[in-house]
Image (cartoon, rainbow, N blue to C red):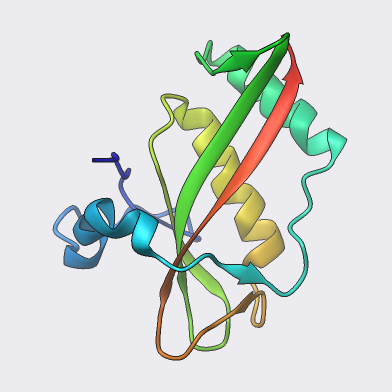
Length: 135
């Protein structure tokens, strides 16, 4: 079973631990539909450099392959009827500062109406961001 962290609202406040929806995400995470963003989320070189600085400062142990560090953060998204990301729940990577960076990245680029295509009445989706840099 994957370990889902405490939900973090885009305002930065933590959700209560007894939030039933959040608890059920652990078991259902990979059954969630993939989020489809209206515009591709930017992961530019500057974002990868920032992720690298954060991970190195926090001394995070991330997977490497042939001289590259690969940092992937999977997360669940709660999406409003208007297509706004209202909550981000990262899967634990062992690098909490990097997960926080991903939440802030999503806040900036998907925290507005119409950011995510919503499918019917579904409100939870999954997605991931991947960063890489040389070891």
